[in-house]
Amino acid sequence: MIEDEARDAELAQHTLRQGGFEFSFKRVDTEENFLREVDQFKPNVILSDHGLPAFDGFSALILAQQKCPDVPFIFVTGSLGEEMAIKALKSGATDFVLKHHLSTLPPALHRALNQAEFQVQRKRAEEALLMSEERYRSLVELSPDALFVQIEDKIVFINTAGVKLLGANKARDIIGRSPLGFIHPDDRKKIQQRVRKLHEEHKALHFIEHRIVQLDGTVIDVEMGAAPLTFEGKPAAQVILHDITDRKRSEEEIRRLNLELEQRVIVRTAELETANKELEAFSYSVSHDLRAPLRHIEGFVEILRATKAECLDDEGQRHLQTIADSSRQMGKLIDDLLGFSRTSRVELRKVKVGLDDILRDILHEMEPDMKDRQIDWNRGKLPHVEGDPALLRQVFYNLISNALKYTRTRPRTRIEIGSARVDDETVIFVKDNGVGFDPRYAQKLFGVFQRLHRASEFEGTGIGLANVRRIISRHGGRTWAEGILDKGATFYFSLPAK
Image 1 (cartoon, rainbow, N blue to C red):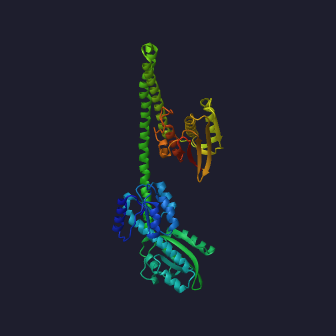
Image 2: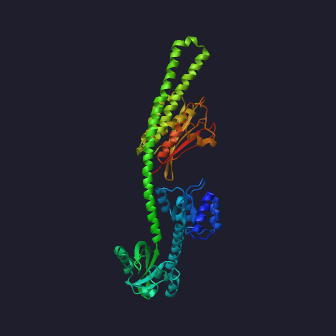
Image 3: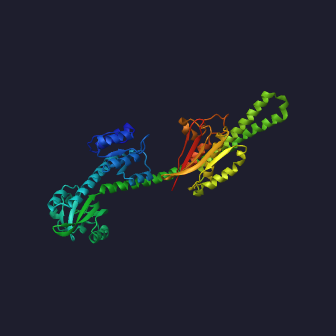
């Protein structure tokens, strides 16, 4: 079990023992331990939490598929939304169980082990087609799943599991009957068409779901596989039936839970809309109520300068200047904070955007700020991406403004802007030869009000890079930075290629 919480692992063990399982158990919480125990412990089943601090369930699933592809892999997690659940099953997970519904773990594990056994037995059954009929009969008797052979429209051989599945006591109760008679009336047409195709194309059929009506009238769900063969010298068909009634019930339970999840999402969305309205009201209050005293401070400072300047000595003048500068800084801080708040609430309008066009407009706008500076620009060709033009413009503006600000102390500024395609992402970078930063504190750069240089050295409020991260995150991308003190910095952001 891949789990960083020992108590959760203990609960899982307790639940499985209550469900009648006897087992050996090993808990791991790192990739290194997981790889070691896969080889040494040799598990029959792997349970995995979704997210661990340094290792996640999807990474474990990929490794498991490489190292032990036949071992069932079940997510046991506290939070797995509908999209992630679908992704898990599509990625090859056998099943998933929510920690607050651990009572579903024993049946899920039972299904997983049965399914793994079914896969093994199916392989053995396929190999048996190449063996003698006597050996074939002996082998299929060992199969836990129903297996019968039909010639034309009659069952001529059936194993013990098949007798039990169809609700009979002995094979003679089944031999000679038409398999079609056991298929639910609503599913017969579908099965007839598939069986006809089997005979015409001589190709195996796999994983066809339908319903069976047992001799006593009980309806069960099965998964059918079929393949042509020669039996007693005649063209025949071998049919394997796997009981999936429990699985279908579980799927129905999952659908029910998904409906409940959708309802919770609707409720949560309404709560978020209410919270957004409250946030807008708060933003208005900040904008209106905090600006009033700032205007008063600035206004009365100007009145003092105009009417009492001759009464103030140099120290008094400096104090007035400090008050005026601080009020302006406070106003800028309020503006940036409101802008940061709006970034998360503004509607994202994605279109095809040419990043070269955005960059050209920004550099033209910044020309007055670059007067009397020696700047070497190294601009690579930037791609077209899917995104919100206004928000992506804000990203470039913040990054280039930072590059210009932190290279101000250099006699000659060098700024490089380029892009690269990495896997399924488009990566954009802005590199400068400025003052750089200590790489140990790189993650602090993107936090609100986080600064690595004193305000007396470089102006700013510490919100620009936080805005960059929020905008790129809303586009489904990533942000990061690299730097060395006094040797420049490089800021990266990525956008999904599709």
